Length: 111
Length: 119
Image 1 (cartoon, rainbow over the protein chains, first blue to last red):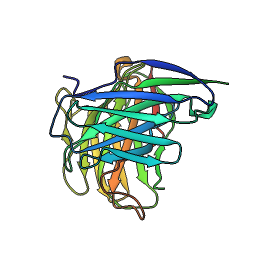
Image 2 (cartoon, rainbow over the protein chains, first blue to last red; image 1 turned 90 degrees about the horizontal axis):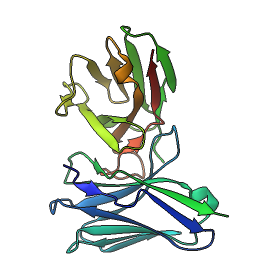
Image 3 (tube, helix red, strand yellow; image 1 turned 90 degrees about the vertical axis):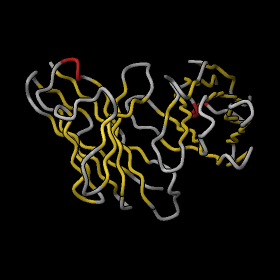
Image 4 (cartoon, rainbow over the protein chains, first blue to last red; image 1 turned 180 degrees about the horizontal axis):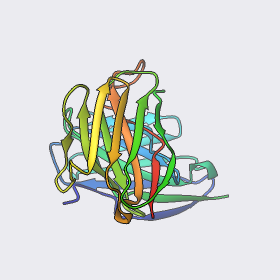
């Protein structure tokens, strides 16, 4: 059972525009959420995270929004750059437990 | 940020042989390390969790006798794929969780992965 879902396998955005990557989850006990960026043949790189006590966390061009009532989080990248092209995974956890990953969204930023 | 290394990055072996993959946390002590497997176009699937000095906890469906995990120190965990078969060909990724300087306890830091091809 996939507890974390990324329903869009791919997304294409023009350089300079906003990229919005979405993630839904089913387990209401999740209390910490993370986004990872992954290039081919490399391990995921931690990007940004958010605790369930917040609804927004911002780090430079990256902002993560959390809507607990909808069990939905999103990652906004603005402005998008060609170097942002990668696969983005959202992940969620409960306490000190393991991470549950989504299936990933491949972002392509078109120059 | 925290750095996790994996060795080797790529390995090709014959069917029936064993392959060992090392995962090291380079600048922090990892009390917990995780081993994942990723098939093409699929998500990361957790195989097992290992805590330093204790036996690994395997996820359902993962054969513990086939995928041997050793976490002998706070900076090193190894995954040995025993009697490898072509269906074991995959991308194996480790991650480490600890208390890196300036980092967060909740964050897992991933290694670069190991591509295993069993002929």
